[in-house]
Length: 443
Image (cartoon, rainbow, N blue to C red; front, side):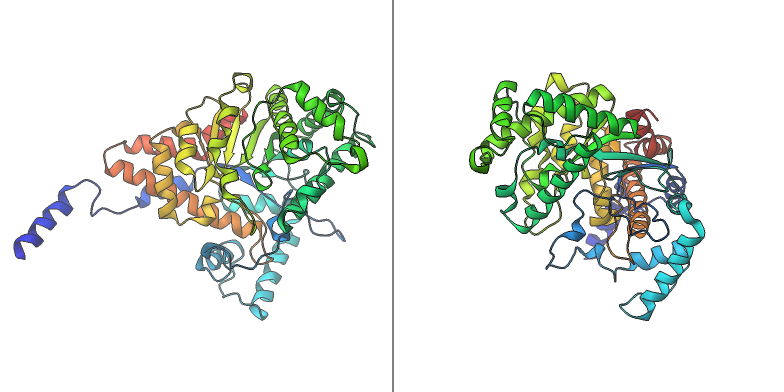
């Protein structure tokens, strides 16, 4: 037994990385000081006096869905990470329960919001060493001023010009999603002063799709987001224009007796519209953000979000002038997403993984990515409103902390194993947290 213990001791001290700290605290301190660019978040705008709370922060806010199962562990109010967020942001050191303590916290939080006024969103990201946030919203918002906040709009409504009554009856999630997309399309049409859809696909593209994208660009958009995986698979196959045009013309007025296209036909039209929108986005310099991986709701189909379904898109030579960003990095399909980063116009952020995973678990994902295509990795929080106690601010604090710790863990392991120098580790940290995004969006 004594000889065995001695042998194990020799192994522990001789193998690189074993017995060493999983995180270099000096490296973490340096990483924490980097002014980051957050590739994906849902920041709430500042409501004016007498105005209702902002609801433009998401096209399909998960909080509107019916939930029965408890949320993932790190999203529960009693998780200790939120106590750390409340203390760091507002100096509140108590626990929060559904009683007077919650009211005490909210009173302190609302006082800070009143004191900061329209500067409140900027004040929040200043606490996090985040220089710029790409905020994914249905419209720009008060207090979200450039260059600290950059807008990413939505493209899904433009893919849904035909009736969706049949599609929305599949389940309660779809009912909500399709009703929201219909509302957003009507808003787009109203801004163009169009009261009814054009009779032909060519006119729809020229009078609705392109002008809407151009308007978003004028209003400051740097990208356009698709949440299609909540409603359908991400397999946007090539559809001949004449086929798409026939489907559109047949059903744009509701067809005979209000008929809607069968899914096989509607998918062909959507596939054509997605690729057309992507081409136009590339022409306008808008990155195409695509929700990949898992999603909220009891009826989400995980296979719909597999990033490998996008292979025919990212392999299409006609789309090589368009940059695609795999939002959430396809989690849990992180290995599949990593291989897609070989494409010259494909990037991935690790938003949402920042609140679903511990720093150690996220560190393992980041190490695999860093060893493969470090130039294509983007920092992202997916900071989003949930409850008054845990809104986008607390979400931003916790996800920012998790992301930087995970990055430090991954880079520490690579240094300890002799894969990179410490100087290279800091260079990679700057790339992930800001430089890759600066290059992609030409900031």
